[in-house]
Amino acid sequence: MQHQKIGILGGGQLGRMLWQAAVDWNLEVHFLDNDENTPCIELTKNFTMGSITDFETVYQFGKNVDIITIEIENVNTDALKKLALEGKKIFPQPEIIALIQDKGLQKQFYQQHKIPTLPFELFENKQQTIAYFQKNPKKYFQKLRRGGYDGKGVQKLFTENDFELLFDAPNVLEFSLPIEKEIAVLVAQNQSGEIKTFPAVEMVFDDKLNLVDYLISPADLSENQQKIVENLAIQVIKSLNMIGLLAVEIFLDKEGSFYVNEIAPRPHNSGHQTIEGNITSQYQQLWRSILDVPLGNTEAIKPAAMLNIIGQHNGDANYPFMERILAMKNVFVHLYGKKISKIGRKMGHITILAENMEKLKQKIKEVKEIL
Image 1: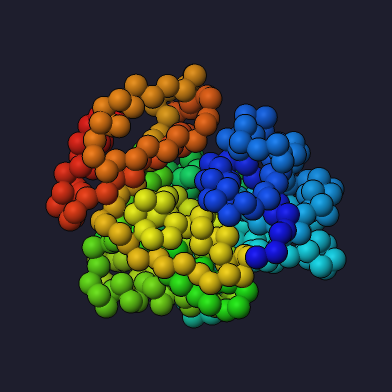
Image 2: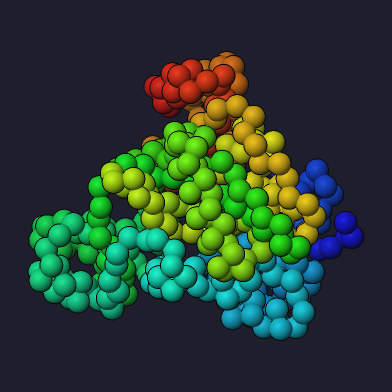
């Protein structure tokens, strides 16, 4: 591999774990973020303070690196498009980031490419959403088209009692079907066209915070179901013609049908366990894909789980569980370097490995009790 300067837009925990994977290969990585307390700031001297949504800031940062990637979608894609026209390598491609920034465009993309997704309607404001519900009173979820993350930007619409909590902004209204499981598949494609998927994982959500509580890898699916979701992920990345790492979230309904929910063109919460649980981690795979070297073996080493460490208070971060967790066999703690805890904020994660699913589920229970 020739030496190249790599720029990452965003300096959060995903960037932190990307940096940790980059160190093994002596990659020169530069970060841009406007948060003076962002998790990456203490790791490297190659840090630029500035807004990743500002055209000029992103453009000037990009001019000084050879390759640009992201650890968050909320970036200025107009600057990235200009840089791409000037010959900079940008993965994922700017037009793909722009598409994924808008959940409405995402849903239309699935329709156009015959990718199964839940039925939906698009509305410009709260009044239109309410008017549609009153004519078609069923169960729905309203999602902001832009700006939602970590469960924020999603609101249930089951009865008229939910009206006051609806978002008064462009939104997707998605039909609610009885869901059996929520699955995620990570898939990567390098510049040479090689594609590899990771085994599907099963996500269990915290209903109050509407974000992942824990996940199990591999998901409890039949061999045929595993093939179906892997092929769905491949269909999505091929339809996008995307270079890089893509997380594909998929619903399995009570009737046994699969639907693509959302996608993220970067490392993802559903892949943290790959650091210890798979031969190649999602972070290593991203580097392999954008540097155009052979993709790594994605096989699971052992059954694994990942539990999010979620802030339980507002104030200085503290981790009173550490000694008890670290005393457990095959349990690994990753803290994200966030000095301030906020209720519902992702502060770190814990990976658990076990010999079989029965032992894994028992260890999940033990760790959750300590947390």
